[in-house]
Length: 138
Image 1: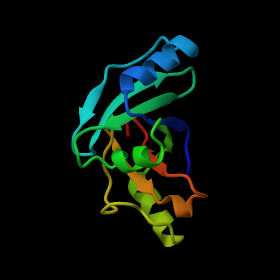
Image 2: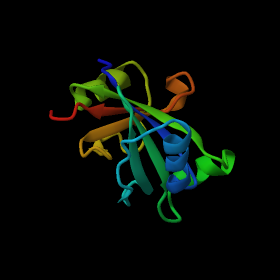
Image 3: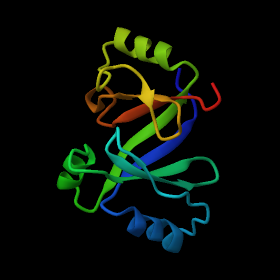
Image 4: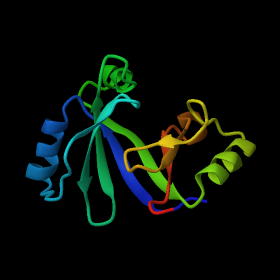
Protein backbone atom coordinates (compact mmCIF):
# COMPACT_ATOMS: atom_id res chain seq x y z
CA UNK A 1 0.00 0.00 0.00
CA UNK A 2 2.63 2.59 1.01
CA UNK A 3 4.29 4.40 -1.85
CA UNK A 4 7.07 6.93 -2.12
CA UNK A 5 7.59 9.67 0.42
CA UNK A 6 6.05 12.73 -1.22
CA UNK A 7 6.83 15.36 1.41
CA UNK A 8 7.49 16.21 5.03
CA UNK A 9 5.13 18.84 6.41
CA UNK A 10 6.71 21.53 8.57
CA UNK A 11 4.45 23.85 10.56
CA UNK A 12 5.84 27.36 10.86
CA UNK A 13 4.71 30.71 12.22
CA UNK A 14 6.26 32.32 9.10
CA UNK A 15 6.74 30.70 5.71
CA UNK A 16 8.95 33.62 4.70
CA UNK A 17 11.38 33.01 7.58
CA UNK A 18 11.35 29.24 6.99
CA UNK A 19 12.10 29.67 3.28
CA UNK A 20 15.11 31.78 4.27
CA UNK A 21 16.38 28.93 6.46
CA UNK A 22 16.09 26.34 3.68
CA UNK A 23 17.55 28.74 1.11
CA UNK A 24 20.33 30.38 3.13
CA UNK A 25 21.41 27.54 5.41
CA UNK A 26 20.72 24.48 3.25
CA UNK A 27 21.07 25.94 -0.23
CA UNK A 28 17.56 25.25 -1.52
CA UNK A 29 17.06 26.79 -4.93
CA UNK A 30 13.66 25.44 -6.00
CA UNK A 31 11.07 27.16 -3.81
CA UNK A 32 7.46 27.48 -4.92
CA UNK A 33 5.15 30.40 -4.38
CA UNK A 34 3.15 30.62 -1.16
CA UNK A 35 -0.55 29.88 -1.73
CA UNK A 36 -3.65 29.61 0.43
CA UNK A 37 -5.74 26.53 1.21
CA UNK A 38 -8.52 28.24 3.16
CA UNK A 39 -10.59 25.06 3.43
CA UNK A 40 -7.70 23.48 5.36
CA UNK A 41 -6.79 26.67 7.21
CA UNK A 42 -3.22 26.90 5.95
CA UNK A 43 -0.85 28.80 3.73
CA UNK A 44 1.44 26.40 1.85
CA UNK A 45 4.82 26.64 0.16
CA UNK A 46 6.81 23.72 -1.27
CA UNK A 47 10.59 23.50 -1.19
CA UNK A 48 11.88 20.95 -3.70
CA UNK A 49 14.65 18.54 -2.78
CA UNK A 50 16.26 16.04 -5.15
CA UNK A 51 13.99 13.18 -4.05
CA UNK A 52 11.02 14.76 -2.25
CA UNK A 53 9.61 18.05 -1.00
CA UNK A 54 9.30 20.03 2.21
CA UNK A 55 5.80 21.42 2.66
CA UNK A 56 5.85 24.57 4.77
CA UNK A 57 2.48 25.25 6.38
CA UNK A 58 1.50 28.45 8.16
CA UNK A 59 -1.85 29.23 9.80
CA UNK A 60 -4.49 30.80 7.58
CA UNK A 61 -7.21 32.44 9.63
CA UNK A 62 -8.18 32.15 13.27
CA UNK A 63 -9.65 28.63 12.92
CA UNK A 64 -6.48 27.08 11.49
CA UNK A 65 -5.65 23.70 13.05
CA UNK A 66 -1.97 24.72 12.89
CA UNK A 67 -2.51 27.24 15.73
CA UNK A 68 -2.74 24.43 18.30
CA UNK A 69 0.46 22.83 16.98
CA UNK A 70 2.30 26.16 17.11
CA UNK A 71 1.00 26.83 20.64
CA UNK A 72 2.86 23.67 21.71
CA UNK A 73 5.82 24.35 19.38
CA UNK A 74 6.17 28.15 19.02
CA UNK A 75 9.11 27.93 16.61
CA UNK A 76 7.35 25.34 14.45
CA UNK A 77 8.52 21.84 13.61
CA UNK A 78 7.70 18.61 11.86
CA UNK A 79 3.94 18.34 11.54
CA UNK A 80 3.42 15.26 9.33
CA UNK A 81 4.88 12.95 6.72
CA UNK A 82 3.09 12.24 3.46
CA UNK A 83 3.23 9.04 1.43
CA UNK A 84 1.72 8.40 -1.97
CA UNK A 85 -0.73 5.55 -2.50
CA UNK A 86 -2.13 4.23 -5.77
CA UNK A 87 -5.73 4.07 -4.51
CA UNK A 88 -6.67 6.48 -1.70
CA UNK A 89 -10.06 4.87 -1.00
CA UNK A 90 -8.61 1.36 -0.87
CA UNK A 91 -5.84 2.60 1.43
CA UNK A 92 -8.39 4.27 3.72
CA UNK A 93 -10.58 1.17 3.82
CA UNK A 94 -7.60 -1.12 4.54
CA UNK A 95 -6.43 1.12 7.38
CA UNK A 96 -9.91 1.26 8.90
CA UNK A 97 -10.19 -2.54 8.65
CA UNK A 98 -6.96 -2.77 10.64
CA UNK A 99 -8.35 -0.42 13.33
CA UNK A 100 -6.66 2.84 12.35
CA UNK A 101 -8.47 6.14 12.83
CA UNK A 102 -8.87 8.37 9.79
CA UNK A 103 -9.16 12.01 10.86
CA UNK A 104 -11.96 14.37 9.87
CA UNK A 105 -14.93 12.89 8.09
CA UNK A 106 -12.80 10.06 6.75
CA UNK A 107 -13.63 11.08 3.21
CA UNK A 108 -10.68 12.06 1.03
CA UNK A 109 -10.37 15.80 0.41
CA UNK A 110 -8.21 17.72 -2.02
CA UNK A 111 -4.75 18.45 -0.71
CA UNK A 112 -2.10 20.97 -1.68
CA UNK A 113 -1.06 18.94 -4.74
CA UNK A 114 -4.63 18.93 -6.05
CA UNK A 115 -5.18 15.21 -5.40
CA UNK A 116 -7.25 13.46 -2.70
CA UNK A 117 -5.66 13.06 0.73
CA UNK A 118 -6.49 11.54 4.12
CA UNK A 119 -4.78 11.84 7.49
CA UNK A 120 -4.20 8.93 9.89
CA UNK A 121 -4.26 9.62 13.62
CA UNK A 122 -0.79 9.74 15.21
CA UNK A 123 -1.76 7.26 17.96
CA UNK A 124 -2.11 4.60 15.26
CA UNK A 125 1.14 5.56 13.52
CA UNK A 126 3.74 5.50 16.30
CA UNK A 127 3.11 9.10 17.29
CA UNK A 128 3.46 10.55 13.78
CA UNK A 129 0.65 12.26 11.87
CA UNK A 130 0.61 10.53 8.48
CA UNK A 131 -0.94 11.96 5.35
CA UNK A 132 -1.69 9.63 2.48
CA UNK A 133 -2.20 11.16 -0.92
CA UNK A 134 -3.30 9.73 -4.24
CA UNK A 135 -0.37 9.43 -6.60
CA UNK A 136 -0.25 12.53 -8.78
CA UNK A 137 -1.64 11.72 -12.20
CA UNK A 138 -4.03 9.00 -10.94
